[in-house]
Length: 165
Image 1 (spheres, helix red, strand yellow):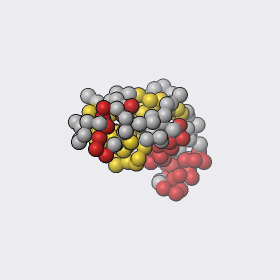
Image 2 (cartoon, one colour):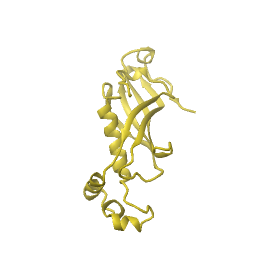
Image 3 (spheres, one colour):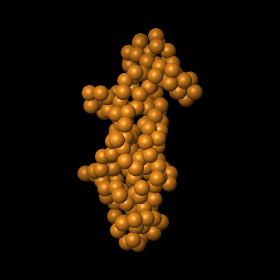
C-alpha cells in the first residue's frame, strides 16, 4: 500500500514507494488511441497482429498518463505536489497489453532543495513492471514539492544536488 508524502523534505534519494496496480482494457486503449495516438496497432486488433508488437497494445503516452493518474489517485505526492518541470527520462521497454495487471512504484532519483522558496525539485522514477517483474516503462518526471519542514528548508539558499548513483 502506498503512503502519502506530506512534505518533500520526508524524501531521500533511493526511497521506493509502492503505488499499486495499473491495467488497461481494450476499450480504454482504443479510446485513448482514437483521441491522442491513432496508430493502427493501438486502434485495430487485426492491424496490431501484423505490427511489430504482434497484438493490440496501449500507447506509451497512455501508459505514462495511467501511471501518473494512479499516483495521484493513490495520494502519494498529492499533499505536497506543486507542479512539474518536465520529464528527465522516459523509456517504453515493452508493450502494455490489455487485461494484464502491472505494478507501479515510485523511486526517488534526485532531490534539489530550494529552502528559500520552501520547495524541492524531485526526480521521481515511475517504474511500471509486468507480473514477472520486467520493467515495462520507466519515466522520471521532475516534480516540484513543497518542503517546509526539516533541515532542507532552513539552511537558506540553494542546497547541493542529491542524486542516485
